[in-house]
Image (cartoon, rainbow, N blue to C red):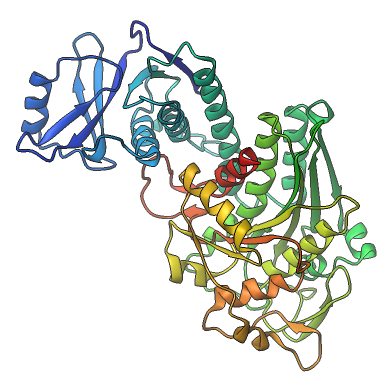
Length: 495
């Protein structure tokens, strides 16, 4: 576990991390050391000789004089004020590159509380590794950096210390999301997911922290009419669950409901997916992991926002008990669905979760579902930008502002009503698929049917950004990323 602290005193760590930017002048490069004064002339000459560019994700290591090693992390083009996300990514790239190190001091531009927070958060997020299942190969992989110190003249202020504490909380719960996503389906079933979160709630303080947790098993789900969760999970030997986490602060300014898609493995059911790439379907519970961990982070930060979180959990498998194309299921609350494609299963479990989340005596100020819902999201927005759909433009704008502040990339998408008719069924209230064109939007329209029209609602499709199958970058590792957690926490902070 990496420790995180802030200082403006004598540098005691073995490694010093500095920023490197591409200058607009003939000088070529500029070293950005924040509040730390250093002699850069001789170092710059060496860096230029080495072919350094200052580009994002570039890491240059050189021997130090007063420290064992200096590490330069790329900031891109020189500017008077680097964006907080640029600082996050640069710090994250450096901490990733420092695996095996004892400690490093990060002297990056930090002239404001927000920039200090960004450096701390990025550095902490970059110090991640998933090695739970390594045995003979474990010694071949370096452990994450043990200690990170953010160097800033603001070190003595209570606000800066609070920013460090927040960064540590954000990193810890992002790591929970990443760990859950990276855990193989042989070890993460609906039942074990639930048990891990029950343990996480207990570790977070349980009732003393305002947290409660409960789990409905397959018998309770069937008897209470959760047809979506049962219909998706009935083909698996690992039965489904519905996990509920509630955070109730002493004083709540608002109350939100979070609903996260929790398909612990998605084969496609009887609409079996192609084998190529199916291993990534262990990430189909990323939405559930994000909303659960975000709730715990909100509780750890003691924010005055009540949260009701629902994680419908199922494993979508083919068997003689699996839901067949043309079967009809009944969602919690009574709406019937003709299942034309068992591989469009996430919307079925989310429908149950959305209706249940609204079936509460407490009035909600908004409801947000998070899901790796459609391959169409990746086609439309790529692997680093998630989609936002809504029935309330004001709520969407508030969320997008929070996402931008957190550094997560989201983009608003429409819900064209002309596509709604494609979800009509000749034998049930609705079908679970419609037009292939605009498939991401059709999925959003399906979910909208289960949300009260006057309740502000957001649907976040995180299918691509939730699981990184390319190279690591910035603070983002290969595998589970933890997308959506920071945006949800920031939204709660804004109240």
